Amino acid sequence: MLQRAYRYRLYPTKEQRIYFSKCFGSVRFLWNKMLADRIECYEKYGNDKEHSPRSYTSWKKDYNWLYEIDALALANVYLQLNAAYRRFFCDKQVGFPNFKSKRARKDRYTTNNQNNNIRIENGRVKLPKIGWVKVVDHRVIPEDAVIKSCTISLTPSGKYFISMLTERPFEQPSLILDKEKTLGLDYSSPHFYTDSQGVEANYPRFYRRSESSLQREQHKLSKMRKGSKNREKQRTKVARAHERIANQRKDWLHKESRRIVGEWDYVAVEDINLRGLAGALRFGKSTNDNGFGMFRTFLRYKLEEQGKQLVVVDKWFPSSKLCPVCENTKKELSLSDRIYKCDCGYVCDRDINAANNIRDWSMRNVG
Image 1 (cartoon, rainbow, N blue to C red):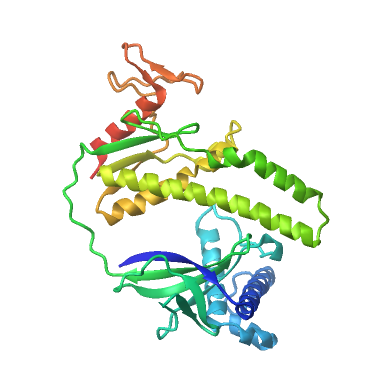
Image 2: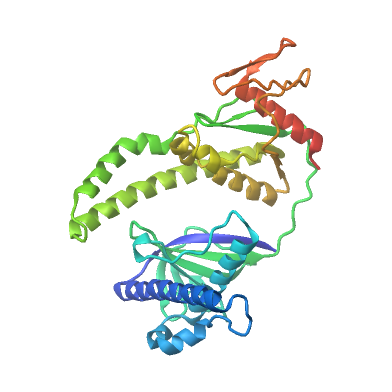
């Protein structure tokens, strides 16, 4: 089964926006109540199963206005909190679940499809307890796809979106992959990546291009009185500027990943720690602007849909320091050395040499 999400823009009426606000607030309220109850229960009784935390249905009895909200939206809060707890105890890199703040402006709720109560027809989407909402259905959901759930969200810029999770049967194409059609990609902060063909991506650096205008708008926001209407208007303006940069970045990454997937059978990338790189050597803005982690995600699912493969090379593999001729590792190579020179006489650009080593490693170990 293949799961895919389809995201559409919503245009709710005034009454529908009020209902969405109630849902967002109720979901946030229930999350905070259940999280506080879990913390208190653990501090008092530890892991004693006889004193388990309260279920979401018991909270509805204490707060009758929760009955106005879709019951499955509240049930999903309970499931999401349980999943957050499991991730915290199973993965050391995941932090403890946090309380949700109204000022964070991450408003969303999730509901499930039961008896076809969620569907799209003639530019409208049917949602539980609210009915038909106007939607821009710019993409057609396949006929054999079944809608499993949907998430309604409100962006900081004031736009409503719906993300519909679908599931459909999928048979992976049985292609005969050619190892010679392998492309190695080496991450490059100024160029986004350098491939084994010597081509640089030349990422447009959308954030850097808009940084000066964004700085002016954020400076205006900082001077306004908190709680005023002008501050709220300016906050929306800043949010729209950030949203535009994010949309530009995502559009470029989609097009670039689609181009690579159409030309190559294997794509090899390094498993580099982007979060650590962003916090070191003042590379934070450049690394976060590139969105290389999102690019790898796009490459993976697009390659899998076509029966191709993304090869991830271990982050400790010395791609930049390895000589492909004599296989010697040049340990004293520094970041300022942009030309790789080996004692055997091999000379090459540092990034191209790394991309070639990544490609050669994947060709030897793929499959």
